[in-house]
Image 1 (cartoon, rainbow, N blue to C red):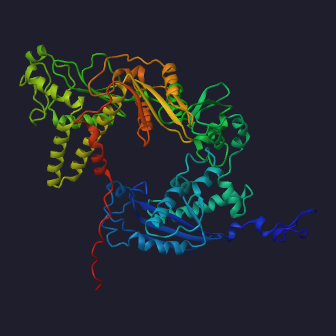
Image 2: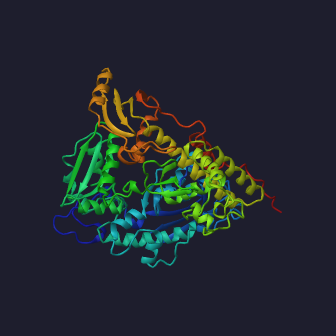
Image 3: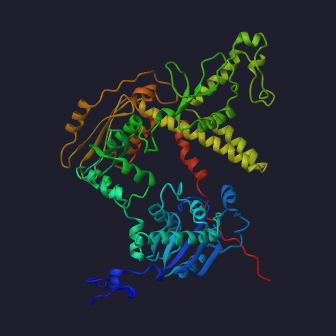
Length: 600
């Protein structure tokens, strides 16, 4: 090997010319194919490609383009049409993906694949290849989102969306949610990012791929925080210099998970920012993954860390309640009180609760006004009236058309539905949906379907969780990953103890020991009809915790060891309708090939 310099420049004394392998592939010699897709949804499992756009470039010069609409095999949802402008009529005569895919693979053969949020586009392309029998080529993939996060600061761009980057770099082509236009805009963004990366000394493809995923200086500097982290399942808490909890997470392997925060595999901007602030990582080893998941939920609810986004505000759950009045009505409330006779929940949001309430109103003509309706108010004629009585949607007790005694039938019907018999709501909703569909009022029928779905899901969740929360004690076991058994003691829906029985040992002594040392859980309020007993709603367990327990139990091989209580769901409850509901929302089977008009 001789002294010298690459490219004819002076290398200085003692410099050594690198081999081609060490130099890598110069970026000017790399052929990139920048691709963008439009689809009918967000997941290749239930959505299809509607348009492909691709641009081939090398050394800043465009070599070719490929763009075509794609027939997804079914109707394009209205919200996708509103976003992209692509209608079902536009793709009627377009080729199917099995005809487009070979052309794209040939166009991109031997190149580096580039996309903005590459996981999305590559995921759809891989799924299409798998479905139609094509082997996915070993493309090198570059994501312009990752590259932008490395070379641009928060003071330059507020986010790394394609529209933002194209505007920041003053691209001649602005993204418009059409595949070829977005691919052209991504080309301009790519060239601008490569120019920025050059200032970091990135000159080859190999350097570029490593640079896009490289950890930040703050991540490298904080790696020592993971040195003392143990292995096994547990919870980890990132804390700042004052001991404030910044982020709470869980893992089946604490050491591996915490270390990943200090590597290039962690690219989330918020998390990288959090790592820069953190000064300590505290860990809580757990006996099982279930215990880790539950502890994580409790710690997030207790500390409300600013870098966690989910599960921070379990108190924001709402309930659908039948009020305690002379003429009861449905109300959305944030807490339950002792003596509440009928309620449904917890429901994740007020909007879902209002949808469920609208579905119940279709079946039971309860009054929908919010005034405090009393007999003296009605007798004086001072009660406010509304148009629902004229529409047959209310018995109008405000006008004296219904007495308190006759109104009791509506109250009893609503209470029965909320207690578990959802058949009246389902029958009323389905009759209305059928009528609207027969009148070709499909959007209104879909709105009714969504109301029914909100009610069924809310009722199914309440009945499922209420059954668990009503058990004073439930002991379950399931096979442990390494052999033996994982054991859980659940009291009033709350995980009171968790442990393991080793492989080959009789589990009974371990079960007895866990029961003896388990946390004492007492119901704080009387049980309510149809929802979670208030012991679970307040002092027992949160809804998310109980759902974790139910998921843990609901696996093949799980065993029910002991039960103190009745663990059942209502015979005519919503749980039996969930599968039917999922089918209603499932994507349609691919339509048979449509006949094409003959060319003339």
